[in-house]
Image (cartoon, rainbow, N blue to C red):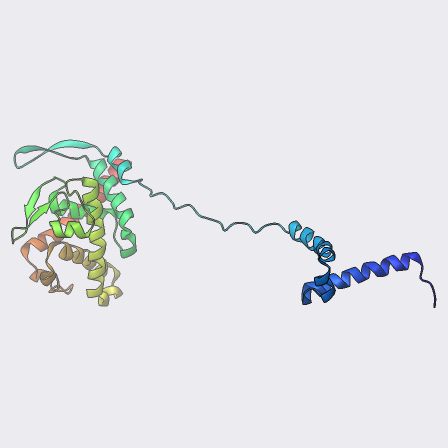
Length: 257
């Protein structure tokens, strides 16, 4: 039997340690390791060092929720300004022109009207058709009161989360939400007109006025092609909303010129 050199003995011992560690990693500890916990701890030390050398996983990236372009409702209230107008021979307090455009833009963004093919001009137009931007109390044919700039009945206001119809910010925001519902409803009734984009866009806006202005029973008679058969008040609303939308576009250009 030959005696191995000292260097060979050291190398062999090192290889044995590596083999033992590899076996334990893939197959679990041996019976000897179970009986000798101190030796197991010594063998585990290199593993612990290796684990410590691995950097911890980075936390998942979190994206901040973008702020609305026009700020919060409170921020809007701080920006809007009022002026004195006249209605029914009496002086009344109403929003100035710049504030009307600002509020219409903010309401359109808040409701996501671009998703249904509408814009801030349409919001302006509907409020123009309802009240000419002058706070008032009206009534439906059955005597139900219609309140504020957007002229909502109490039940409709409640369904939209409108708690103060006299607050112009709340009222116009609620109007934009209701207009989105109206556009979705109208789209389902005029889907066959999509082959003519210009006609579809015009009829979509008609549908918003129909939905806004009539009861469920009345609005369901409209099919996009029988506008002339609608009540006179609804036809007037359609015309006034369209005229108001054009006014909004011109006013916005004038204010930014």
